[in-house]
Amino acid sequence: KNAPQLFRKFLLNKNWDASPIMLSGNTDCYQPAEQKFHLTRSLLEIANDFNQPIGIITKNAWIMKDKELLKKMAGKNIVSVLITINSLNEDLRRAMEPRTTTAKQRLRTIEELSQAGVRVGVMMGPMIPGLNDHEMQGIMKAAKNAGASFTAYTFIRLNGAIKLLFHDWLQKTFPERADKVWHLIEQSHGGKVNDSRFGIRMRGEGEIASLINQQYKKYGKLY
Image 1: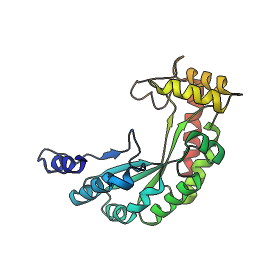
Image 2: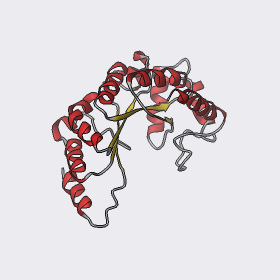
Image 3: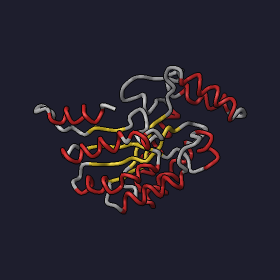
Image 4: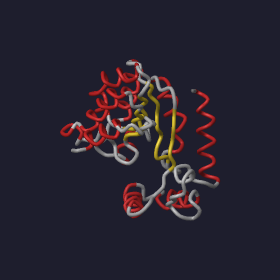
């Protein structure tokens, strides 16, 4: 609850260089708790007051509650937004991200933010070989048609306890291809499913990761 006060204090520091700040690097800043605490809203208001550049990554349509504020920030060229879409297949989206905004709603969010003058793009992630990697072209095309002006993607990595949770989910949800998907992930992280190396951890390596990257570059020409 002290985040807004601390943020304002940092921005008032004479040595603050106003480098862009990214919200939601780890946890979505528009998760349900935002509806109660309004921390993201408070941070954006302070950033707008101080002309502090902000980047946002979210998968939730709740961001539209702040559309007018984002529009003001866009007018000063101090905000950009990435909307995460990992599948256009609702069955797969629901299995991967239950209780989250549908792909159709996310595309509508891209459209509305774009029409409001906000620089908005699509984040595809995580891309999982054998599950959703084949959707990259479709996602990029749909987002482009909705008004997205840039793209990004992440390749799956399973660090810490996430590895066990994902393995259990994979076996229960997709038993017929769980082993294949697991081995494809291992092939893309040097025989492991996790990777902490900067510059590699979010892209993977090897043939499978390279094919996904080639798709990204090819379909990225749409932009």
